[in-house]
Each structure stands twice: as structure tokens, then as C-alpha cells.
Length: 86
Image (cartoon, helix red, strand yellow):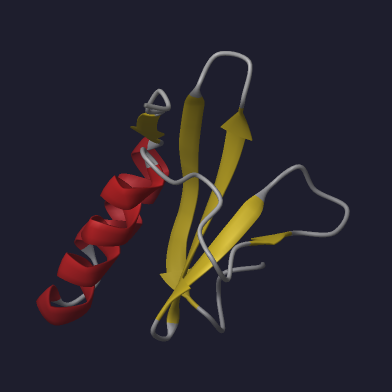
């Protein structure tokens, strides 16, 4: 069985997540938890000019970095799609 990753959420990303309305925040939390077992889910894209990945959850985006050598995923940003890449 493959090892699972540790998921670390930056303080700023946690603050962004708390500001998201409840029906959306629940889906986003589930997606973040799934990253521990599947760090590159279907639909995941590597962002150009950055060492980050993103997944879509409805109109929201989760931007994260991945360290395969130490099995750590760091959630950098959780935002609506119009604000996610700024």
C-alpha cells in the first residue's frame, strides 16, 4: 500500500478557507483530505513558472506544493477562481 502524504495548511490558506461559505468549504476540506492519499488527482495541473499544483473544486481553486522526497503537501492558497492566481 502506498504511503500517505502529510498535508500542511499555511496559516494564510486556513484563513482563506474560513472565509468561504459552508456548502463550498466542506467540499474543499474533503478535497484537501483526499490529497494525502492521492497527491496528483485527475484534473490536477502544474502551474507554469511555479513549482505548484492546483485542483479545482467548483468555482474554487486549491494551490499546493508537493515534496515527494519527504511526503509533504503544503496548501498555499484556497480562493475563488477569479482571485486564485494573483
